[in-house]
Every structure is written in C-alpha cells, then in structure tokens.
Amino acid sequence: MKVGIIGCGAIANIITTSIVSEQNGIDIAYFYDKDIERAENLASLGGGVAVLTFEDMLDDVDLILECASPDSVKYFAPLILENGVDMIIMSIGAFMDKDFYNQALRIAEDNGAKIHLPSGAVVGLDGIKAVAKFGLKEVSLVTRKSPKSLGKDIDTEEVLFEGKASDAVKEFPLNINVAATISMACNMDIDVKIIVDPKVDRNVHEITASGDFGEFKTITMNYPCAANPKTSMLAALSAIRLLKSFNETISVGM
Image (cartoon, rainbow, N blue to C red; front, side, top):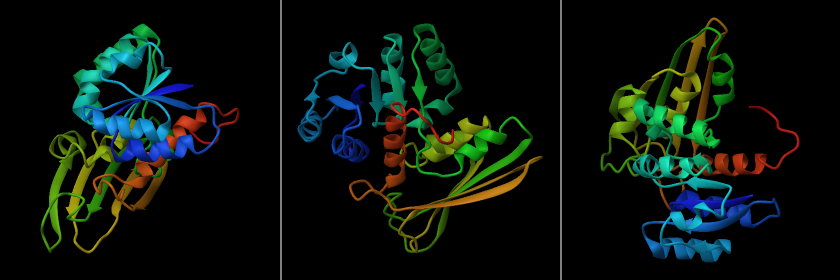
C-alpha cells in the first residue's frame, strides 16, 4: 500500500518513524506540508519524496493520511475523495460540521473512496460503537490537561469549557479531537468539560456512557508528544495500528 501524508508535524513524524522501521507492506512515499522544509526533512527520514503540491501525489497513492488541521481537512478532503483516493483523517473535529460531513460522505460514496477515522487519544471507543444503537442514552467527556498543553499560563485549576462537543471543537480545534471522535462513534453531540490543571503532566480523558445496556467509564492518561504537547502519543499510535490493520488477515476488535 502506497501512502501520502499531508502535514509533517509531530504526529506524522511518529507515524513515519514507526512504519519505516519494520517490513509491513506500507510505503509512505510522499510528504506534503505548507512548510516545504518540514516535508523535506520527513521525506528524508522516511525515504520518500517531498512534493510542492498535494496534487503531485494523487495519482500514485492508495491512501492519504491527514495530520494537519481541521481547516486542511475541509480543503483537501473533497479534492482527494473526488479522485477515489482513501483517507485517514486525524483532525476529526472537521466532521462536527454536519454540512461538511455530508459533503465528504457523498463525494466518497460517489467515487468509491473510504474515510478512516482512528480512535485517537482515547480508549473505549469499541464499546461506545457497540452500544450506540442499542439503548445508549448519555455520553460525557471530561478532559484535563496541563497549562502548557492548552497554551495557558496559570497556576490554579480552571474549567475552560463546559458544553457540547460541536462547540468545543470550534473553540479548541487543535486540542479536543477526542470529543469529535466520541460524538461520531455514538452519533450524539456529547457533553464536554475541559479543565486546565497545573497539577497534571498528562492529557487525561474520562468517558462515561450509560443506557439500557448498563454503564461504563474509561479513563485514559496520555503522555503528550514531546514535540507538540497539544497532541497525545496515543493519537499517533492509533493511526499506526489502523495502517497496519489493512494488511492483516485476522482483525481483533472493531
């Protein structure tokens, strides 16, 4: 499988380093970033080619991995999907815009393309998907991050946001993709609380789900990426796992 990457920051570096370190049938061949130097540096690491425009890789890849931003998803995804090229999208918050979601879905269906959304920085998504249409009534997310992760300079705990996921991703587009991921998994605009806490050194996500099936709670405590504290390592690892699953004969879980 030949892959191109859009966005050559921290997540792309982790994914590329992992994939090229083993024989797995995945060839990350092209790298695109608005900062061509970043693309060239990652291409050198991955043994691929840095391209000046994303169109330069469209005709020679099976899949494009987006690691940039929600705005990049909204710009690039329709153009990529129109060419029948599959995508893995990391900036899932873009899909909380229902009009864009429906547009991307229609284009993908019309052109035989697939859109893959990794589980990202949380665990328990398989359980939420399993019960989503079987009596799931309430889902909430409490996210707790350090001031550095949220770009704040404070020394006391503070609730930065409390409301719906659709509003959270607008206010924190680079910090709260997990809210969008959970919302899409259960087809609900979930309740979200974001807390900045100087006492924590991890990105902590607590999910609570309840309904006719019962109730479950998960707590994920991720170390942030060293190169980008806004991003959890687990987000990159989930994309690596997804990429590798495409070549597996037996798949465990959902």
